[in-house]
Image 1 (cartoon, rainbow, N blue to C red):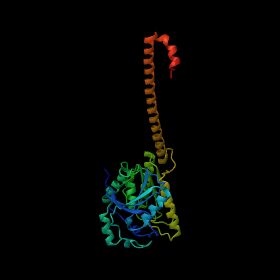
Image 2 (cartoon, one colour; image 1 turned 90 degrees about the vertical axis):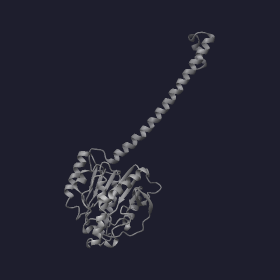
Image 3 (cartoon, rainbow, N blue to C red; image 1 turned 45 degrees about the vertical axis):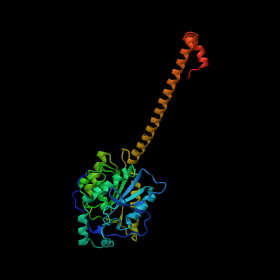
Image 4 (cartoon, rainbow, N blue to C red; image 1 turned 60 degrees about the horizontal axis):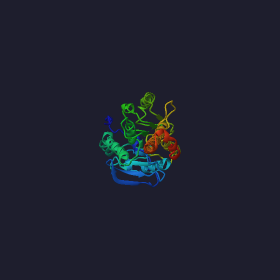
Length: 338
């Protein structure tokens, strides 16, 4: 059972700042619920790797903005994986009117009321059920979770031992407990802004914990923090008119794609990708060996039947014409030994 996250939904003024991405989503909203949630699906194409998928966790504006849909399309195109965006606010997103331009104001009283309803503890069970359903109902074997702001909190919580996901990318997360980082046991990448009103205070302690987790538990961890001129929220609500922010956003998107192949920081232990490849190779060899065993058993049974037929024929001939020793040379000419 998942542990309880003690922090309420904490936001800062930067959570309500950013821009709406331009463009039209290419995927589709799916109303047939999965794990109790509707979702947006960006298909990875005909060449999609059927055994793997990505789940994208949104910020507080959810699917009310086109941003997560457009980003899901981008990841699906670059990774050739199916990308799912669960509607874990079930249509009740933070009102887009609350979105201010970069450097604008903070939340209104209405927004403060909204965040009380959608605490992490209320939303997390539905997200976990959704991810489990992707494996049990859709047949995916491996899931990567990419979370921004609110979704970034979920990405860390889903990196715990019993989580249904396998890899997490956490971009400028909301407020977390340090204990949440202590529970990380799955590969994680952290994508950080240069200035983050929520995460900056706990950043040194959190990164120190992750460094220790990597050493003590051989968990691949990657930290991406070279994003100049960025603030909390740049990964999902970027101001693409600002050239520095655009460059950082594109860099962060590429880091997220790379992390789906989970290249960890240099260590002597194998990376997640290497272990996965070893597992796949081992499964293939086991199947080949099982096939060899089946064929060998069939050959043994066939050989035993041939020996039995020869023995019976030998006894029949010997009964008519003499002893086995006298008949054997003749039998070898008539019925050669196999």
